[in-house]
Image (tube, rainbow, N blue to C red; front, side, top):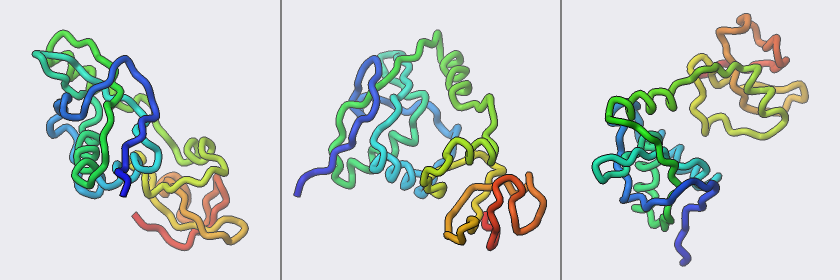
Length: 178
């Protein structure tokens, strides 16, 4: 039986082995088993698509952005996946406080996705919204389109009148689930 290997789908300044990086975020974000499973599914389906952001300090490669992916990749290794070297982008920081400031900025959202912007962006493309962690305010709704084909769309319920039809996209709703 052939080993599964994580596919790399990006390039960066350097490459490091998983064990050559250490997590930096601590408890900034909470991730449970379900979020790790979702990241594994994403890596299986789309490959490793974005480099790690690493701050080299005190002889360590501190992973500023990507601790969830570190956990997911470690779990994949336990499941028998072969792990290649991973692309990294080095981030300059003068000290730990500066590195934390930069980390907060990479995790900040200076813009906001809306239902309209997401629907316009994806167009007719098939998207499994259950795989994504979209911003709060965007909820999962089971909907039927004009052709009565079952589909799942993400709709901001607070932004529309509580009717069975979205005024923006015309979807008719069977029910709302969080």
